[in-house]
Length: 320
Image 1 (tube, rainbow, N blue to C red):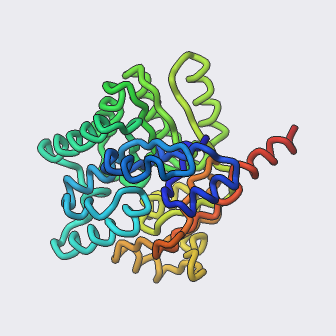
Image 2 (tube, rainbow, N blue to C red):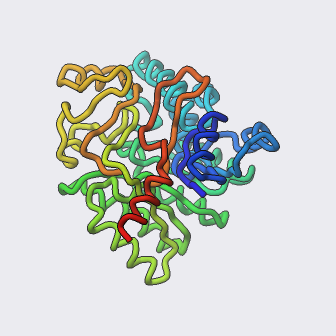
């Protein structure tokens, strides 16, 4: 069973089956239009499935336009189809993209919650909040409301943590504590995505285990690989986060075609809202998180999408 499988296309699911998975779910980012998605896959999928609804899609609809959100259904669509459109509109209007960088007003906040409430009524298994891509746009209040909405429906909330690295004041552990604090106040379950990728696992993993020992409904996942991969527009690569992570431009590279970043490439990416796939060398990231290119014209390959389960099991067995 895998709760962090982004890809929903047949090819990637076949790869997952070969790795021993029979249930592939995306609890980190999730999907949009849950009812339609289920109808598209019922009786056709080779694996068991179930997904959370995606806070990023709800924010995209409220802050950048529902017409842009309509172009996608899963996280791959969000990155490859929706975000280039959002970036183009934002640039034309002389503003930052809304979905990741703008704090909603009361009306927009209501619209976001209405979208997610409708998705939960359609059968979403919880609310996925990819906060690591929306660090400057999602306030602590909004984060709480996402988790509260999930708890009111008896569902789980799941989030990519807000920060990464060990350096104050943006320590990765703070993002984990934010999620856990909300869950404890709500007496609700929470799942923390790739808990070790904040590069402070010697603190955060025992922290999660202590919460579980004390009866709290906290779950966490980890990756067995030594590099992270994401789109180049991820907030991880904002200057302040790179400093906290202890990396520089040359530690980042484009996957296809392979190219190490320079300061010039970084500045261009910051200006254009680049969505190409990149990998970050020093980041330790363990579940699957698979997103493999198929018949769709995408190159957003994640190196950790192959043999994750078998690799992790091998390492555990070897350690025994």
